[in-house]
View 1 (cartoon, helix red, strand yellow):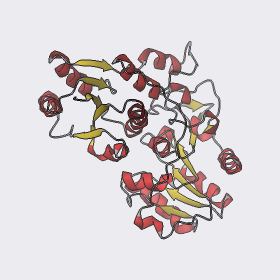
View 2 (cartoon, one colour):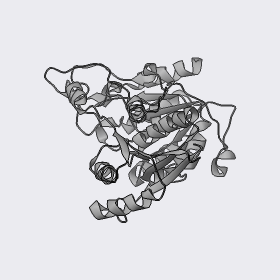
View 3 (spheres, one colour):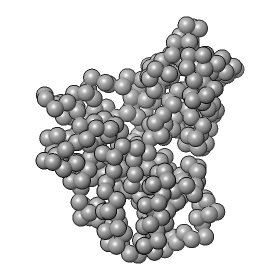
View 4 (cartoon, helix red, strand yellow):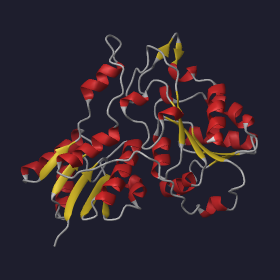
Length: 339
């Protein structure tokens, strides 16, 4: 008998796709008789490598699948999987066009509720509704529930230590505390000032710090740190996503902005301390299984100003992320060591 097949779409951003992977892992554990076809950008395939019964299909939105004609081409590619349902976990223009093709062809589908009204209420200046919104992972799970598949998320970290990449294994010291940091983000209002990190490095001279994520400029900053501090190593540009996950799985702790580093830590069950400025965990984007107690943020009536961190959040003339002090971060790392 043919197994049911669900087509799942989530094209970006990196952190959101990683959160989807956490949900799909739970889904497959509870519905082993259902096969999944995951559609996302090729560079995110590694997030789904360990999920049984899942086939990854890459989308190329910049060339092959660009525009309505490209999405029609993608639709015809995906029809070959003989799917039964469509789960749109993105709900953007591209995914809605693709979903419309499937709807017109008679497929059953469900679409993500992004809670745009509630999110606007959380960030508006007047009559702000400051409350915890439904976690995004639960909203993703709701889409499968709409399709008739019960899904219970346990919201716990499941430590999964993977084999270290060969380029890292030789210098990885298990006798010390190994901490990853993802100090950069797409938007500047989510980035803690780089000048703060050397203070943290000096506070824990016996720890090893691994720096993740970023482009050319960020790589130069990380390599400068690595040159100046023996306990710092940059892996920016050295590892692909699969190898980054392997390294993160072996770390004792991850420290990240509100960015993909936090969600990658969740995928392999590594505890993450996260720093929040213009954004807020109340929007629902805390890493799967991560604790609100590990969120470092300074309460202020102007926070949050943004759901995605693309807008400034001035608090008494200071950017919200800069309200976080080095003492706060050092204290939280010390707490994490104690358990």
